[in-house]
Every structure is written in C-alpha cells, then in structure tokens.
Amino acid sequence: MKKNIVILGTQWGDEGKGKIVDYLSKKSSYVVRYHGGHNAGHTLVVNTKKIILHLIPSGLLHTNVIGIISNGVVISISELIKEIEMLKKNSFIINKRLFISQSAALILPFHIAMDVAREKKLGINAIGTTGRGIGPAYEDKIARRSLRIGDLKNEKQLSIKLKKIVNYYNDQLVYIYKHEPFNYKVILKDLLKAKNIIDDMIADTTIMLHNAIKNQKTIIFEGAQGSLLDIDHGTYPYVTSSNSTIGGVITGTGVGPKNLNYILGVTKSYSTRVGNGPFPTEVFNSIDDYLTKKGNEFGSTTGRKRRTGWLDGVALRYSVKLNSLSALCITKLDVLDGLKEIKICTAYQDINTLKIYSSLSFFNLTNIKPIYETYPGWMENTSGVQNIEDLPNAARHYIKCIEKIAKVPVHIISTGPDRNDTILIKNIFL
Ligand code: IMP
Image (cartoon, rainbow, N blue to C red):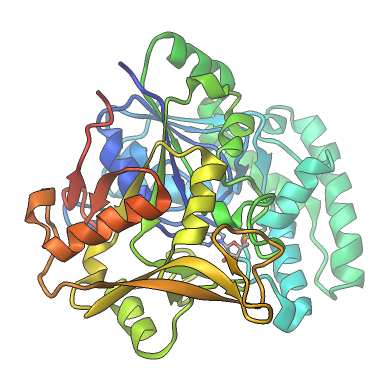
C-alpha cells in the first residue's frame, strides 16, 4: 500500500527531522514543506558532505523526488535563490523538480527589519526569534495584506501592492524603531529579477498534490520546528508563528486528513530548545556541557547554543495526542553513549502545592519541577549502528521505556548524522 507520511517534530525543533525525511525520501515521489520559513535548519550528511537546507524540502537531494513548497510556507525569495544556487554548486540538479505555491506569502526585507527591531526593544523579554521575519510575515498573511508568490506574475499590481505595504512598514520602522526607511523601488527591482529565476517553479501545488494522490504517488510532508513551538498548542508566547502540529499539514497544503496515512513524530533522545520560554527538564553544568559538545547543539540557522535537558515524557505524551502520532523516530541515541545514568521526566510536581501532574497543561508549566525515572546508561559506542540487536541492552531498555511512557511504538532510531546511521525497526512503506 502506498502511504503518505507526515514527519514532524515532537519537541522544540532541531529533532533531526531533515535527516529522516532524506532517509525516507528514497522511496517517495514528492516531499512537501508545508509551514514555517527559512527559520528552519535541516542538516543532512550525504557521502560525508554536510548540506544545510532552510527552505527547500530535504528530500530533493534524491533525484527521484519532486519538491514542493506549499501555500503554508512564508518565502524569502532571496534565501530560496541562495539555496538553489548552493544545491547547483554541489551538483544537485533541481530543474523541473522544485515547485512553489502561488499562494505562499512572501517574506520581504521590512519583515526582517521589524522582527529584529521588536526583539531588540523587548530586551530581556524577547522571544528569542531567529530574526528571519517569520512573525511579521505571518501577521501580514492573517491581516490579508501579504504579497504572495502569485503576485510576481503581474508587475503593475505587484508595484501598487508593494508601495502600499512598504509605506505601512516605514511608518512604524522609522517613527517607532528609528530604522532607515525602505524604498519600494529597490525591493521591486530585486523581486522582478528573482521572478525570472523562479518563474517556471510557480504552480498550483494543491492541484499537483491532489493529482499525485489520485495517481497513488507516495508523498512525504516535511515538518519544520516542533510541536511545542506551535502557535496554538506550544509554549505561547515563546513559539513560532505557524502551526507546526498536524493541522499545519492540512491548511498548509490543501490535502485532507484522510490522505495522511502515517504520522511519524521525531524525538531527540534528550531535549533541546533555542530561544526563551519554559523548559521543565533543562539541565546545567556538566550534563549540559556533555550534551552540547557531544550533540553539537548549536543552531544550524543562527549558530546559537541550544539549551539542553533530559527527555520530557510528559511533553512527549502531549505531542503524541496533539498529532495523533502513529509512531516515533528516536534520534541522536549515540549522543547518550558514555553517560552513567539517563533520566526521563514522567510527571511534573507543583513546587507550591506539591500536586503531581502527569499531563501537560499550560496552567501548570511554571512553578513546577520534573519528576524523573532514572535508567542505567551504557559505555559502548552506538554511532552508526544499523540493527537493533547490535545496540547495548541498556540502550534497548531505554527505547522500550520511551515506548511505554509515550504509549506509541518506536519505528526508527537514528545513530548518527549520515543517511546510513539508521535502524529501521519497521518498514513503514509496507
Ligand atoms: P521565529 O520562528 O524566528 O519567529 O522564532 C520563534 C521561536 O521559535 C524562537 O524561540 C526560535 O528559536 C524558535 N525556532 C524557530 N525555528 C526553529 C527551528 O527550526 N528550530 C528550533 N527552534 C526554532
């Protein structure tokens, strides 16, 4: 049976989704980015070469795959072109293999300026955004004033709309944030130049996907960020501005829920988060140093050091429910090699009332401390292991405990950054 697969993050992003999308893409026909923008950073290692993609679907590295950037994504065209050039330089042929929805909203230079200016003004209360203009671009979409990819097709209309929106932003940027004004003619010139490069890629991607489904093609929907950064269900206001949970697939592509056959939640074997906001299982000192160094926990988009912590089973159960997960993929298992003991948080305790919570609610995410179960670690090297039988007993026990706590099976384990460093417990295409 052909399956349409959603791959999304269960934590605060950076779970290693890009590698898993790339790994599963060899058996699929389409890979679709459906939300977020170039705030995402998907690191892939192909034949020892490191490729970082922010906007282009990770599956495009396979020549059999057609990549789609659908309507739910906010697109910086200059970033998109940079990425296309980078892929070409690395000998990836993308001609006639990348399509962009005409309905996707644009990220323009004033969105970035506004994002950065607001964060600066917020000081210690800043969200800690990636500074890529994501929030302002989604605001414009909801306020119905966005420029969309399809607007590039009509130069006259584009010019009128652009002038209007540049004035709207200049009013605020110049008077409130003391920023230099933007000149719409300069932006227009850049957009028209860019249009010539991407013109052939602009398509009705919803129709393309409906046809792909009709023709029984396998589609992978590639999530960005993670469920706890979801605008509705995440740790608001410390979230991104799109739906990184399952609903984002449906609104972000125009594909209905009956056509989503398998939903894989990618979970790091521990936790990380970049930016500010609640993080109940955060660790400091030597464990933080260990995870940061061994896991190379620095953002692939901004280079910021990620905060680290133990796996949060309460948050994981919440993500399982939010997304109707079919199964989990556990990544970076090898990072835990060499730790004497490993912990998973199974409940939160209110530090004032001592009440215990086994499920996550945003009424109880402050003033809580994590309750942990502690498991024995392993000293063996698991990097690159490809069979579950070759994992140390303690590592297999750890995976079993995750399954028990999350109440869903683990179908894939990643033991390193390369495509081949992967244990496939269940062939999900069957
Ligand atoms: P924004 O998406 O740039 O507005 O940032 C909002 C929050 O989401 C910040 O805490 C960012 O660090 C976080 N964020 C956005 N994209 C990613 C990602 O791809 N991985 C991890 N965190 C992200």
